[in-house]
View: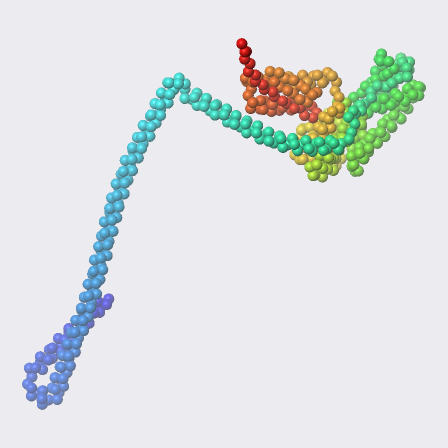
Length: 509
């Protein structure tokens, strides 16, 4: 825009210069006289000089403007030439890069083709090598793979067994140490008789003549006695004694006291039998209530539903493997309370659950089912705490223990039942239990001999060292223990010991 204005000013200056020149030429052609004589002419001449001077100045300015614009245009032209040169250089660079990229792309395509061919060649070589290996080894690749996997699995299993053995050894050492301390403290604090009472089912007679009076004329007295008491009287050749048989321990105890009263009185007939029975039943009912209240006082509990107290008292006349059940419950409650104190938890609920854990045995002759579940239902019906109920139902693992209280009840039950002299069992059942222990352990592979020891509380298994190594021995002991837990019922615990002995023998000649 500035260039256009400069050009317009230059054109205007040229026009003015032409006009001034024209006027000066005319003034030169006039006579000088007119110039001298005529004032107007003189003014015109002066004006011509002024115009001539202005024309010269305008030309000079126009020339200066033209030169300045020419210089500016030249500078712009030089800049445009530089920009054009740089653009041309960049264009050449981009074209070169494009050419290089095209060459690289072509090279990559070529190399990709080479790699693909190499892969195909490698796959062919692998296949040929596999076929050659199969031919040389004489075994199929799938079979070899299976054998390798079996070997890896065996090694992994062995490593896992080593890890499990080490972890179990450490955990067992720590657990045994703490358990021994806690149990030893609890047992040392418990002071109880080693030999417990058993229910008496034999009534002593002053003489064998009393047997005839008990039987009565044509068996009238013995039939009345059995009908009233609900028991069976066994009058045999045993001298000076009569046996009382019944599945209900309360009935058996009432019948025993009734018979003792009749023998002491000497008058035995149906009326006296009914009178003695009523007195004996009242005595037993009172002794049941007294026994239940004694158990609460002995344990240190002051509040319990009266029906539960009566059921506890009925267990005074119930035995399990020769162990009085009520004494077992009181002893278990003491042990559970001590264990809870050693572990730093509140002992009252643990003690309550341990005292009631066998309450179901008071009615098992009336209700079918496990005494643990029956006892839990009875405790729940009479408003016991759910934690106490859970300890009762879980003490024989009919229900999985979900609390520390349930585990402590199990431990207290096992300690009370398994201590020396706590329980007795018949010789035949004892022998059968030992034979069952040995039979179950003998069914496992690699076992040579099995010995049941310590009244069935330890099983020692001798294995073939060629079939069972040290790690497998630990695994075998674990599997035998699990098998005994699944197939047998027993008080306390059974220790399984696997013995592996390797002997090398050589003759010196």
